[in-house]
Amino acid sequence: MTQIVPILEDDGPQGSGAYRQILADIRAGVLLPGARLRETELAERLGISRTPVREAMRQLEADGLVAHVPRQGATIRVLDYAEVMELYEMRAVLESTAARLAARAASDMELDALTALNAEMASAKGAATVYELNRQFHMTMLDAAKNRYLVKSVNALQKTLLILGPTTLVEPVRATEAVGEHEIILAALRDRDGLRAETAMRAHIEAAHRVRLRALLGRDRPIEGI
Image (cartoon, rainbow, N blue to C red; front, side, top):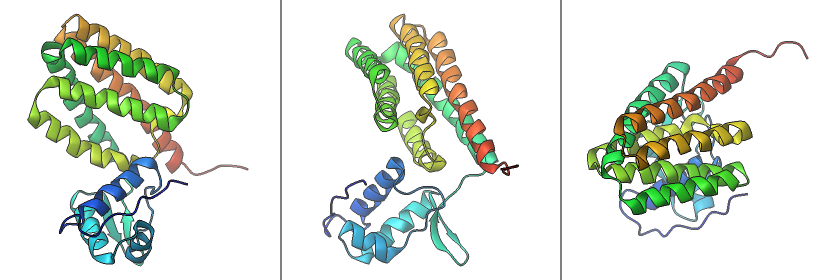
């Protein structure tokens, strides 16, 4: 079970510490889509009063991560098919743009960091480790694009992506494919070929999208037989 580090009461009027911890729990799969959020239980688990928890839940609702369901109260949102399609469409647009800009602006040190992260990802064991290395790879590339407005847009999108459920990288085949797709992107970056980097990143996101849709359709399909 994930260990929760108690949060100090004085971390801001908006309960920012509670907000960050709940986001971390969503990212780690401690809180899954559809999970109920009870103020009393969260406050007890985080070691704080209900006030910062209430503020954190308001912020999460404003972010679109939490919804109020009749007779259930606050829950982690479950995205429908159309929302997943829209999210990945925007992710492809934003991250392929980041790859194109990074081909022009990335330093040699940043390219070395990306190469090292992908090498670690290739040999990593466990979905959680692979997920974290993949997240660092994409965030490092985003930083290498050196466009603050693009960073803000991707960060906002990433929050919503947290509630999709388990990462597609839980499938070992998909994790291996992702490493190979990263290599194609890296080759384009090292060649400073923005168009090729953009095309490769779009193909990478679209591959993840296809895996996500298969999982979504499997979740929604009625079980037939025994």
